[in-house]
Amino acid sequence: MLGIRWHSRAGHGAITAANALCEIIAEHTDLYSQSFPDFGAEKKGAPVVVYNRFDENIIEETHHIQKPDVVLLLDTSLINPNELSYENILEGIQDNGHLILNTKQERTQFSDKFSGSVWHLDATTLSKEAIGRNIPNVPMLGALIKVSELIDIDEFSKYLHAFLSQVFPEKIVTGNITALKLGYEQVKKV
Image 1 (cartoon, rainbow, N blue to C red):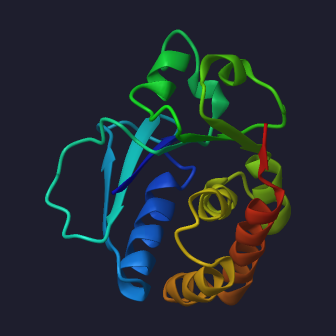
Image 2: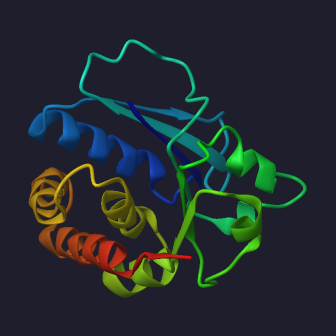
Image 3: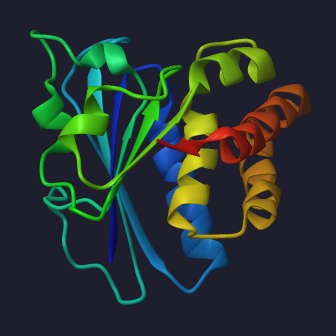
């Protein structure tokens, strides 16, 4: 089973990205999938955690993922005394797991605190350039596709285009596909 945990702020699209990933993987691969968020009644900008599970077998677990294989941090400003610590972000992550950070910095404090693979990309800038807004979910999704190797990026791009076209105009869909591919191409291992 592949377990993924997303740390984000409400409004950055983590729930939408995790749900899209779940639906596309379930529909177009042989894997079973699950996606669920964990948040209160907070408003835009509040911390949000989202979980994904993928497995070849039916998924019966419904609890939080205790030992994720991949953790994504969409907003490093979440690490502050009032919200999250480095330990919260790294909690339970597998020793050989992957941490994907939305940051301009190549090395962060995570590089010294985590023995697994640390990846980084500037998803904020990529999203602003591709769609005109700070919604880093889709570049981070591209990075996740590369790191996890869940599905071929070209196949996923095609399926995501169809998924987003159900709700958004073509200009927004095209911008998101560009952001997805840029995230895939630009994520780098520290």
